[in-house]
Image 1: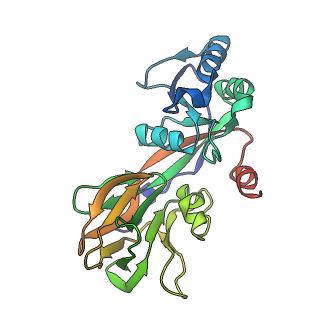
Image 2: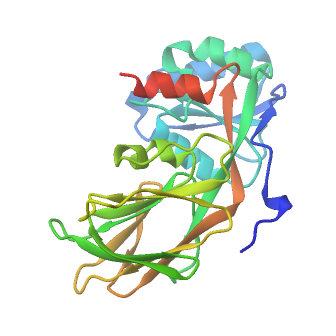
Length: 274
């Protein structure tokens, strides 16, 4: 899997004035309160037509990071940007605070936003490839039992390791479970991904940052402990003993909108300086 120039995208582009907008909300209506009514009111004032999810100029996401991941997955590969209004706890993927919904959306609808082309990961455990925006995680499916994982890069085995799990995170996902497990942050524009083990039974394990051309494999070497495969927070498969998961960077990109002049480093300070 060699890297080609066509795989490399500019990480940022300017927004355009919005004529049509769709929306996605948190699964529990009480979390966002009257935000949906406020969204429709702002759209009416700005002359923006609210439409179903077929070909809008932008998607307004009312919720937290989980809702943002649903939106980015839903519109993955379409080029349609998703703009988050935070009603969650951290809301790292969002750009507008819930209290600032009106002013933030007015600015966005006028074209005052930028779009980040977010790279993805693809995992295949033999049941078909699954695409992740944030991360692909393997974790013991038996509470209290440690998993034994053999891992390797590009066909070269790097040995077996006892652990609670292992994370493969995109640059976007590097600020999620990966950072909690002690992994490094990959800033937007990094054309790579990171592997971080969770509670490894070793004093010498370090995270590893891999480039687009690299393919990493994980084999469940446990004798009798199944391993769960979790994509963007959802259990999608079980890796039985001796089964293998391969992870690589995907060809599809998600489009993440941020209201100007919000930057990654501003959000980083806001989310992690406490």
